[in-house]
Length: 294
Image (cartoon, rainbow, N blue to C red; front, side, top):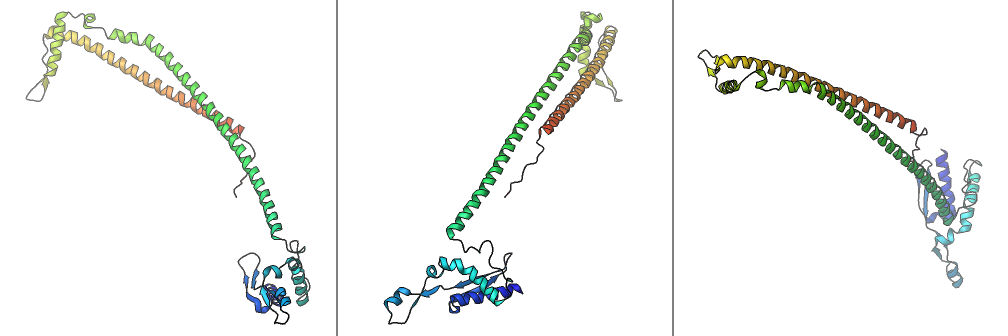
């Protein structure tokens, strides 16, 4: 109710002051927090110069906003409007004068200067916030660099330890296991075979390449000079079986050691990364970054 009343009184005041015949439009806008009225009119004033030159003629008017809305008019406008409101309604019901209007309207230059000053203050504050965030970003980047460097050092240390362990293990393998392998690789001479035995074994190898299949589906291999060849083959097979078993045992040992080494390296890396993470957490600043999103 009060909104409609103040808009109605404002329209009457403006149309009386500037001439109802000069009013173009008056619209109340509700699109902002405070409803307000847009009052459009033609600024008509007496054409004093022309009237002074032509006193015998009908007085003439002209359109001139500069003369109508001069500094005097701007300075007294709100005071006169307040008086009008108080006269046509309960006094103080519609306050017009406030901290902005009580001293008269400000000039465009004053308004621009105030706006520029406020913008300068805001820009300064924003620059300080950006500077603070930049310093924090540099600090965080340095911390990350130090963390990465620490992790690299820890990884290198873990790698050196793993290499040292592997080297010691290979030395032990060479001292204990390889001599046994060398012994198992002795030639046929060490088995008591002579040149004729070599020929028999060579013939047996060739016979293996051309086995004979019987009508029942069984496969037979001819053994040249079996009286000499079979004893030698038994010794060779026993040695070969021993070599195979020993080779399998060494392969299993190598596989177990390789797995132990991988587990050890992973454990050391995990410990190094956890230590680096813990140190990084301790170096982090307690105060959170300020959100400067505008």
